[in-house]
Image 1 (tube, one colour):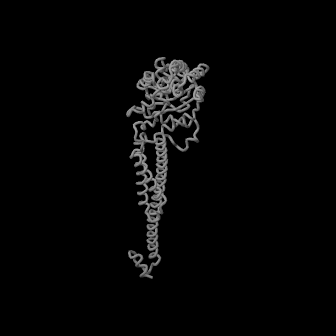
Image 2 (cartoon, one colour; image 1 turned 90 degrees about the vertical axis):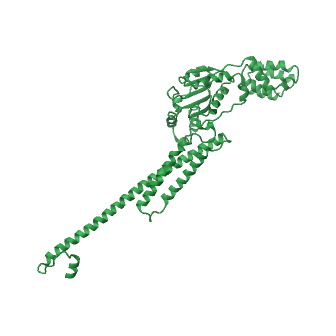
Image 3 (tube, rainbow, N blue to C red; image 1 turned 180 degrees about the vertical axis):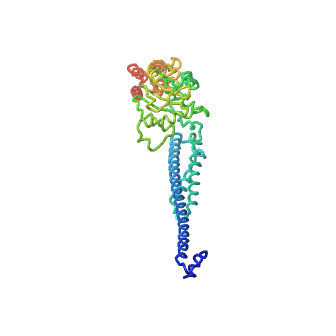
Length: 411
């Protein structure tokens, strides 16, 4: 027993006369060793808890980053699909394909890391891997902005705009060249933010607006971040306008349909207020509350433009147009040239009596390009004087609308 005690505590002198004094220091020494060992264990335990907590926190950051990247990747794919549907002949930029591949790879690696069994991996090693992967995903997210404004190999796609095709566009531009130059010049004037084109139905307002829209998109550097075309029509629906605008600006969040009108307006405003945009509104019948839509005021500060067409000069005033442009009817000479072009010389010369009646038919079109083109083409196959007289009778008793065209086709 004495030897055993001496081995445990060699620094303590053994005194056979006072065994109790001999044992007190031994007991104190034993407790010091136990306390020291417990302190080391506690420190190790606390350190491990800190590492585990840090790893869990970083795993949550990795999960959030991966989810954000997945949403951005899905939105990018939707935008690419829209561009390809609108302009099938275009191809994707290689950098778009590369970014999508990088996003897919980063998401897959993050999912593998989060689902991997980490029992054989030290906390420090796991934390380093998680932190590194989170940084990589953040880098991929940052590079997204370098290409989303030009998703396809076309100069126009950078504005996320769409070329608009008007029926018989080449023919309807006859006599409208000078008119289309006015709104075009207004796009370069800083103190004009809202421009209204007005005139009677069929006079060529949509054709002029189409020319300006397409000419703007054809320019490589037009200075606009977004070029947006919206067909409004008679019954104004703010929600439909919002849906069209949000597609053109590339906001394709899956929660859009569940948002209220005010929330949609806020999101549109948030995006457009930071960019320069050109908004083309075709066929406006009454005042549109652009605040409800979410469209910022177009002014000299943001240099954005809003151009619309309407049949009423009053609507121009209600919309706050700084510039009002009246689209006039064609003169008789230009109208007759446009009509002859669409009828064709062969038909006009097929019988000596047709030319005189044809002039009367053209006069009934009242200088309206749409009527001159559509009625001229409807009569291009009529090669007897009686057919032309029948057409003149129909036009003399009604205005040149679509129901009249049906009658002309039957004849």
